Image 1 (spheres, one colour):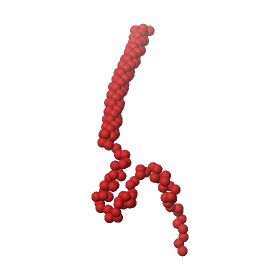
Image 2: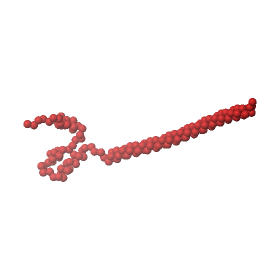
Image 3: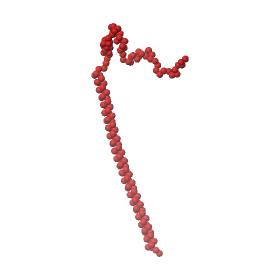
Image 4: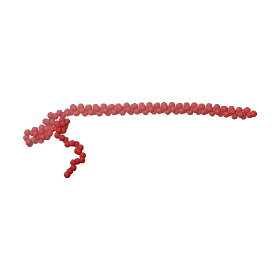
Length: 153
């Protein structure tokens, strides 16, 4: 005895009430049986069957070449517009990147120059101050030593 499957099937079987709903979505197809039934005799030649099929197909609306050309032209226009927009945006982004890089280089260069000048000025001031202090100390030492040697009791 076979046991029922453990898992239910992935898709439920197509029920008959779903067929009319499906028929409203799918365009009407021409069944072969209608061509065969429309023939006058049971021995229908291929040519008459082809004529019957073509006459039924010609009754359905089809899109002509004008509509297809218009649709293709619309697609081409959309593609061209998208490509132009992408190229323009790319050029604008590239120009903005170049401007930002130039501004950053100029600002950093100016800051480096300012820092170097400030450091040079500070070093120069420190050197001058140290030089003056050393000269004063040396002068005081010279005066003190000279005073001791000159004024020996």
